[in-house]
Image (cartoon, rainbow, N blue to C red; front, side, top):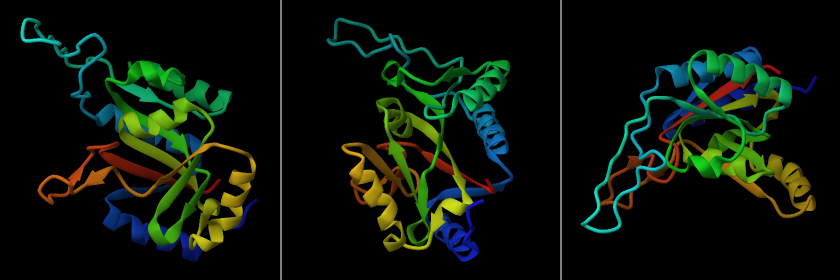
Length: 209
């Protein structure tokens, strides 16, 4: 079993709060998936346009926007056995469960559940290796992002992550996401706004293993 740096874990939790990130400590991946399902269950439907509800191209057309009636949860990157469990529980709750074809969900996605590969405590940053486009899109298109992170994957500083990052680069071209809190911008009249360019909320489930 990998060693857990307790000091790094505490530092991660301390730095996550100012970044508007919610950190929850759970036992294992199953509990993390159950937590993500609970988040999706409590969340309101996406307010974005659904597929087929695009705005008219001219003033002669008419827009017909339908409010979502089925919540959508995406979980790309999970092993078959884990996704099978999540999909079963999600469908029992009436969710639309996605694992691929995220391009077809550009109009809105309620919750995405992903797994972190490493985390840097000093900035509360999660690192995700996105081998597929589906995983990359899921991290950006969802309104709420839930990340499962093993405590043993947390290192104190970016310098401690260099060996891991070097290994990624040696594998060849790949999209690697560095996620530190929900999407935020202050471009509009210097007013801090969340969720403009990505998820409105970020939840990180710390698990033992």
